[in-house]
Length: 482
Image (cartoon, rainbow, N blue to C red; front, side, top):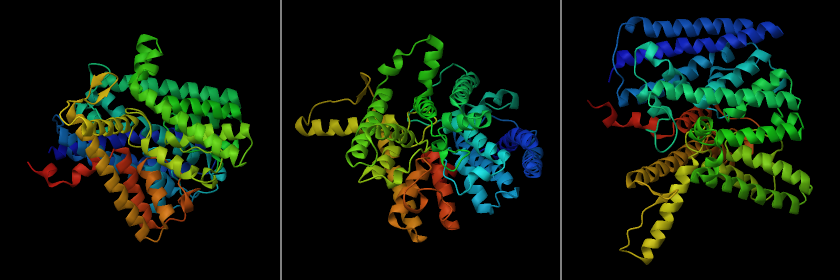
């Protein structure tokens, strides 16, 4: 382990992250919202903290190994969550404890969208903008952004990219050089954000709201500048734009890269993961619409409207809201939360276990059924007509087992703090899947949750963002052995 090199990287990245405090400072100056000092002090704390980490080891050089990459990734998300909480903690409005400030910061960076804030409409504009910006930075992974500038830092970045990028297969690169890959991803990401903001603005949002919501839409974060979320605008056009970009952002970004490179969209319909993802969305929408209409919860047109938006929002782990889905009849709230376990596609900004993993698990299950009938048959697991390596299938099952085990342990831990079963179950789902809203006492916000429970949920959000193994591997003795 190259601890001095790791410390140098962390220090540099914290100083780079301090640049993200400049836009909220500008917003605070424009609106004179009273939060300027909090951001100025936070800028100083970030610069000084990063400098103190970097200066003692500033001359250290070396290539990061795979284990170093995992440690840097986990440390950076943890350290960044800590430094990102400073403006929330220092601001007079909202008046947050350290635990609440850290919870809000990690929720934003992990694109979870769970919040402990109430009365969001009355918050300073700079605080609102900063929440959305945190979500946007976390959406594609600020590590990927750092990888793009790693050549300037004198450190190779492939290990960081492999450790941070979500998905079952992490060695795939869109371009031969890792820096070019990171830049290509961010160009696509920034373009989607700009087009989304333009669409919102044309549809009737103010420029401020359009920019803020484009950040959290493309990042699949779910933070909003209003307590009523997207429902505040009561606009079918805005909901349609939001739905479209939530779906687009939940696709594998490699598909977007291919579309940009080859000027074609047909590959979206040929990709087995994308097709399976759209099938899940379609079934959820149809079922939700039928239940809402047949129980007279809404009329047919309203049922379609709310079913489409909420189904896409929860299934993609965005967490935006136009209706209180937690109060929907029968099994619908449970169904929607369950879809968040599937989440978005691999290499997307979505959370959950990822569509490709669920597809592989289903195909593996079907293979075992066929083996009962033909015990001696050689039946490969195929996706898109191509046989999947058995090691990948095994790794997916390992991930699935670890995911469920972590889920059960966290749920029991939350129940030990006094939460009821429904609240605990949905709170872990909302954080581990990077979803945001839950059921029971956490349907609207996590304000009523105790501090010990919030710390556990912060850990859950980090586990979800780093896809469990990246974080859990640090707790194994083998990782620290030479």
